[in-house]
Structure formats: C-alpha cells, structure tokens
Length: 376
Ligand SMILES: *Cc1c(COP(=O)(O)O)cnc(C)c1O
Image (cartoon, rainbow, N blue to C red):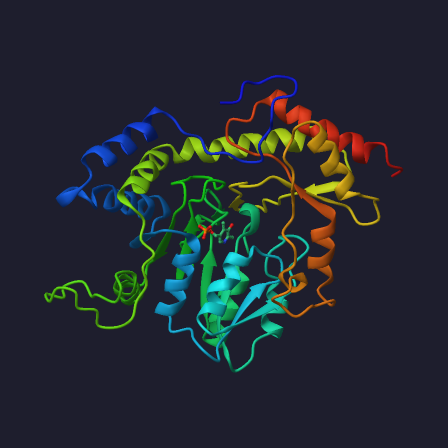
C-alpha cells in the first residue's frame, strides 16, 4: 500500500478495507454458495435498511441500476419529464433517457449546489412525472421545499443519495425521504462493495414492483419455475460483494467520521481564503463525501494551473462535475449561470477516510499558495 512520505501519491479517494472485509469476503467466496448464496445479500439489505430507517432495500450492481429500476417501478416512460439539476454526474440522468423519458435540466442554487426549488417549480409542465433530487458531494437538497412542490403538483420525489451516506436532513437520513432512494458502493464512495448499489423505499407496493422487476420479472411467490410475468432487469449484487458491504456497514459510523474529520481539517487549513466549502445548514449533517471548494466570484482562479501544481506533487485533484448541458448529449443552457460558474470555480480535494493531517496540509498548501498570492 502507500507508504507515507514527502512525495507519496495522494489519491483522491480509496476505500478503507480492514481484516473484517477480508474475513467476510473470504467466508462468502469459500462457503457462500448453494443454499447460502443469498445470506450476505439479505444481511446487507437488512443492515442498510436499518441504518437508514426505511422498510425495504434491494441490493443492486450499481446506483445506476437502482435508479433505472426504481423509475421503471414508478411507471416513468416515453413522453414523461423528470426534473434534475444541470450539474450532475451523468449516471443520474442516463436511466431517465433509457426509459424513453426526458431529463429536464434546471439551474442549481448557489448555496446548496443542488436543485434550486424555484427553478424546479418553473420547469413543471403537464408531462412532468418526477423530481430527481441528487444530494451532490454530500450536500443536501432543500427537501422541505422540494417535498412541498412535489405534493402540490402530484409528482414523485426521488432521491439519488449516492454521495450522501452520513447526510441527515432534520433527523431523517438522505435517501429515506423520497418515493425511493438510490445509493452507490463504487470504490470511490463512502462505503464500498467494489461496484454496487442499493434501492430503498418505504412504499410496500413500489417495493413489490421493483422486486419483481429486479428478478427478470419473476414475482415473489410465483411457483412456476422460469416464469417471468413481464420483462424485467438484471442488476443484482453478488453475495461476495455483499459480504464486503456487511463489514463496511458494521464500520459505517467510523467511515463517516473519517470523512467528516478530513473535511474539518481542510476547512481549518483553508480558512481565511476567499472560498466556500460544502455547506452544513443548521439542523442538518453533511456526510462530506467529497470536500469541495468554490472560489468567490471576482477572485482570479486558474483551475488548470492548480491541478498542474497538484499533479507535480503527486496529488489527485478532480474538477467539479460539468453542467450536463455542456455535454454533447444535451442541449446547451447558457442561462444556467449558477451551474456554469460553479463548475469553473470549484475543485474536489482528496478525501479518503485515512488521509493524515500531514497529507491534508500538503494538499492545502497548494491551494493557499494559489489563492493566497493573488490580490484580494
Ligand atoms: C456514483 C454516482 C452514481 C452512479 O453510481 P454507480 O454505482 O456507479 O452506478 C449515481 N449518482 C451519483 C450522484 C453518484 O455520485
């Protein structure tokens, strides 16, 4: 693994794997076959549902798959519109397109970097079926405002909480508040199963529909073998992946605490600079999946130059997501000024759970050098 030294590589993320993950994965690969082939999957689903405080969970091969099946379960299809923030990873939008529906991009709020509720309301048409609330980098969408809009207009409110493990909105965990929630356990996320995801809901009927969809259209309780009642999906998590996930769930408080410690260290190291970091409004907790800074308007900032300084010192930096409207698959939206300005003025910092204070100081020094020597 990496030995810490003055020039050791600082990855932007990597999983925290201990003897526990290795022991469970070994057990699954040695013994988890035949009648025991679902044991870790069932346990993982239970642990995750319990953690979140929801009734149902279905482990999947990715968050993309969880979103695809969940939206199919809500009946979203050709002709429908789903409102989503312009700044997002494409995985949130792709399933909408796969279902034949249309992602309607709206600008983000300057404070949350997530959906601007007034922009959402302005984008509603008779075809609107759902609002997809993505909690970006751990930041929470304004769930009270979005719930009120969804209720008023009879829309489904969906949560993509792939980046929001550990985030809490006034006592309720991200992913537990919408019609359904989706999470990712890709190797870069707060907890990992290598690749993987999960669908969660409190809606018994939606759970039953998605369970059938998730099993190639075979309903639970169907006695005939190989009898799909409809065309479904195959987005399952394997028992070996779930074994790793069970160990991560036993350590979830420690893993979220690691993310929060890293964020607080960056915040202290960057205090006094003309920038903002991930917000944590009163009454909420931010899981701080990815510590991100946004340089204040009017302050010169050369993102490429800072990334080059990182690279020369063996440090991974990541650009903020591009507005989807700037990608070839979407129509451009020059009026989305918040999304466009955020993308150009922000950077994600390395944030794996075990990052040391010395490593954080090494990263922060480049940001201080870059911004500190600029005229204020
Ligand atoms: C990572 C991520 C996804 C995709 O997750 P996969 O498990 O790779 O499909 C979706 N939405 C958001 C917000 C993400 O960060």
